[in-house]
Length: 269
Image 1 (cartoon, rainbow, N blue to C red):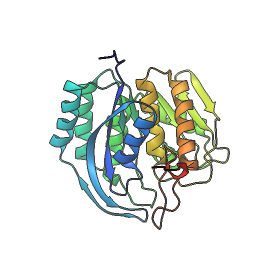
Image 2 (image 1 turned 90 degrees about the horizontal axis):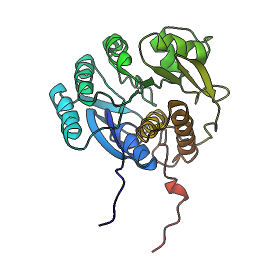
Image 3 (image 1 turned 90 degrees about the vertical axis):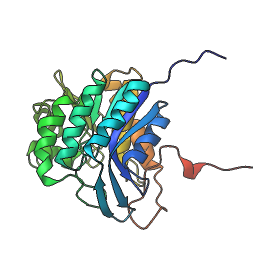
């Protein structure tokens, strides 16, 4: 057999999107796009489509921990992406599970509201997310709205100020994503200060799953050994391309991003 270089493995701890646009489904597609092996620990099941979220069922804390333990003990985890956590028992389970992958970089996407406007984080769990999860993050990737919710700062605050405020909550770094900003730039803030990541703008397309895609791509590039700034730059490129390729003809609502450009492919027999 030919020698094979070990492929990095990334673990997504997040909710399932039955519509396939965001959550675990988007995470696995982003991992594959970035050439890492994807694994999952599902935190919640959702019944949703492009129009809205009809039902959410959290997975038991015991099962969340068991999923992480199973892959960590056999396959190994080179990086972790944390997404939808839903409620406080889930958060406590994830905090415990992260002890099983100590040493792996942890990218936290603070999922609070779906693209359709449905609340995905119990209001009472916000404090637990801030106090228990953010301090364990290598990097947090909120969009502007999530940044304001986490920091408590107003709309006139700059991404640099938002990043600094969230950094004070305990993570090693913050990337405030700019998909909804005027200039489209992401801003990376860590102990050394702030760095603007201009890169490509999010072109017109479909954006459901863009945040999941960005954070998973960032985790994948960290798993591949990239430095944070370069990983953030490349993750922005992947997410922007996925939005530009977005599938606007899927469903009646917000269409999903497309990391593979499948609508552009020509199939032949």
